[in-house]
Amino acid sequence: MVSATKPMTLDEFLAMPETEPPSEFICGEVVQKPMPTGSHSLIASELSHLFRSHLAGAKTPGVFVESRHALRPENRAYLPDVAFVLAEHMPGRNALDRGALDVQPDIAIEILSPEDRPSRVAEKVTFYMRNNTPLVWVIDPIDETLDAYRPGLASTHHTRGDIITGEPVLPDFRLDVGALFAVLGSAEA
Image 1 (cartoon, helix red, strand yellow):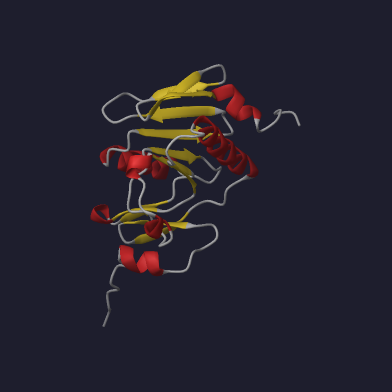
Image 2 (cartoon, helix red, strand yellow):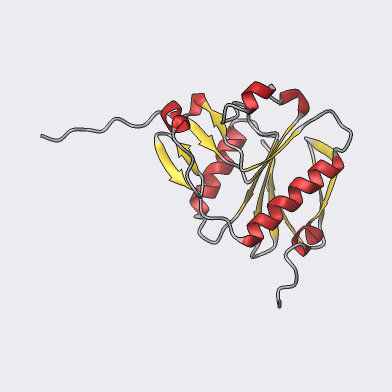
């Protein structure tokens, strides 16, 4: 006799102890994120710093690094590498201390690791677009590129020399793509 195993629920996943590297939850499946590289960490740290600097003195928005965002109707929990949540969408302090945030990021940033599969990254971008995340950036530290996605618009591809904005979320935020990748040092080092 073969017994079928019951798929895990999102709540069961969220109650599990955290793994290292962290895991995401996609429709009943626990998926471990690739271990971040040094380049990955430097870029995440730099982006967090740039957002915080840009918003100094503003009503407290949230800039999160690898913070879990759960969307119960989709039975998913993702950990964007960097997530930005506008102040008006921020959950209360008690919600911040409970674990997964039940809000979608206003900006979701995925920084590729060498082990990332293109299909998994595309699935995440599709998820964010389907759930109206206004801006998604996918950053490739190896190719030094940034692809921007906005619901209903064609994606845009950026390289060193480009300056992009945080539109529509932060239209006055400017990111120099070359300066972002400069935190990695020279390619010859």
